[in-house]
Length: 346
Image (tube, rainbow, N blue to C red; front, side, top):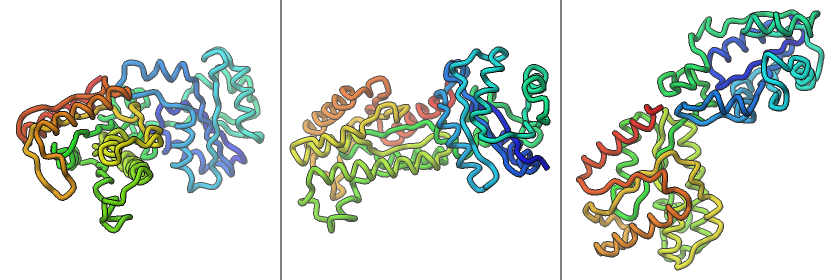
C-alpha cells in the first residue's frame, strides 16, 4: 500500500477506461490525487474537425469530481500547462506545476504511457514508484475515438460529461404551429429527454389559473423556470435533446401580452446554448386549446415574421432551419432527418 499516489492525465474527454483505471489504482493508495493536465491550445487542435466543442480545464475537473465524489481518499486537482513548452519539452516546468498541484509528497505515480517514465519520471522522481496502468483492460476505447465519434461511443463517455456532447435542438414557433407535439414526438423517436414549455403551466402553478394578473416579473420567472427544466433535460439526454421554447419566445409573449419587454429576460438569451433551431411556420390548421388567441391567418403570419426577426437580431440566424408547408407527418419526417444529420455529421 502506497501512502500517496498521483494519476496524471489529459482526459480529453474523460471516459470509462479512465475511471476504471483510476479506481483500480486508488485501491493501492491511502490517499490518491487525480491530476487533470490541460493545454488550451492543444485542446483546440484535438477537437478541430470533430462534431463537438473543446472542453475546458474546469469542465474536466468538475466531471471527474462528480464521478469520484463518493471516495474520500480521492481528490481531483487541476494542472494548467498552457504556459510551458509542449511535450516532450518542458519537463522541468511540468514537474514544478505537478508539485504545486499535489500539496504533499507522493510515493507512487500511475500512468498509461511507458515513455513518460523513460523521458521524465525516472529523472525527476527517482524515489517515486512508477506504475503503468492499462486503460483498455475493461473498456477498449480511447479519447481519440470518442472525440472523432462521440455518438457512436456514447456508452463509454462518463455520465457527468455527456451533457457537453448532447446536441441541443430548440423547437420554435408561434401559436398553434405544432411545436409542443413535435417536440414530444422527436424525443420519443430518439429515445431521449425533452423540455416542456413552462409558460403553459405557470398560471396554474402560481396564479390560481388566472392569466389576467400576469405582470412583467412573471414572464422573467417563466423564463428562469424554463432554463431549469432545460438543464435537467440536457443532463439526462441520450445524445440529443429537444427543447420546447426558450427566452426569445418568452420575451415575444411578454411583448405580445404585456405591451413591453422585460430587460431581465434578455440576460437569459443565449444562441450558443443551442446547436439547431427548428422554426415552424404557421401553415397548419389553427387549433384552440384554451391558451391561444391569435387565430386570424394574416395575424399568424405577421407574428411568425416578428418572432423570426427577434431570433435573427439576437444572433440565431445561422442556427435556424425553417420548416414550412406539409402536414404533420411530413414535418415530423423532415425534423427527424435534420436531427439525424446533426448527430452524424463530422
